[in-house]
Length: 286
Image (cartoon, rainbow, N blue to C red):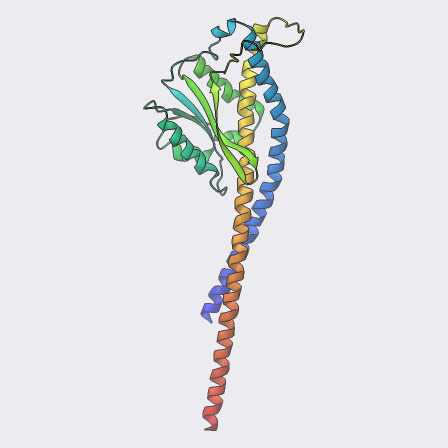
C-alpha cells in the first residue's frame, strides 16, 4: 500500500502544478493583449517619425554636422540587449544570449560593450562581457519618460565618440508562438541617400528644417527604443503563454498516466488480497 500512497501523492503534486501553469498561461494571455495594444498604438507614430527624419535629412546639407549621423570606423561597438526579468518563457532569453555571442564573433576582436535591459540577460552576459549599465528596473515602471532617459544617455555616449556603433537586439513579436530575433541599428542614424527623395508637398517649416530635425531626432530614437522594448514585452508574454500551455498539457498527460498506473496497482492489490483470502479458506477446509 505504500506504493499506492506514493502514486496518490504524485497525482496530487502534478495536479497542483497543472493548476499553477494554467493560471500563469491565463495571466500571460491577459498581459499579452495589453502589450499588443501598446505596440499598435506606438508603431504608426514611430514609423512616421522615422520617415520624417529620413526625408528631412535628405533635403538639407547641414545634417553632416550632426554627430548622430556621423558614420565612423567601428572600433568600439555598443549593443543594447533586451531580455526579460523573469523566466519560464521557453527559449525567449537563451536565444537572445546566443545571438549576442554570434554577433560578438563578427566584430573581429573589437569586443562590444553591453547595455542590458532585463535581468535574465544581464545575469548571464555580465560574466563574459563588459556591461556598462543595466536597466532591469524599466519593467517595474515601464513608461516612455523612463525609456527616454536611457535613450538620451546612449545618444550622449555616441556623440562623445565613446562608441562608433550602437545596435539593439531583441525578440520581435510575430505571434504568441513565434518570436523573431531582431538586430537593428540604433546609431548612427541611417540617412536616406536617394537623391530623388525629398519633402513632398508645399510645406512651410518654422523656424527651419535644421531646427525641426534637431527636435525630432531624440524623439525618434526614444520612441524606437520604446517600441523595441514593447515588442520584447509582448514576445515575452507570448512565449510564456505558449510554454505554460505546453506545461499544462504535459502535466495533464502525466496525471492521466499516473491515474492509470494507480488503478492498475490498486486492482493488483485487491486481486492479491482476494487470492490470500481464498487460499486461507481452502487451507481451513483441508
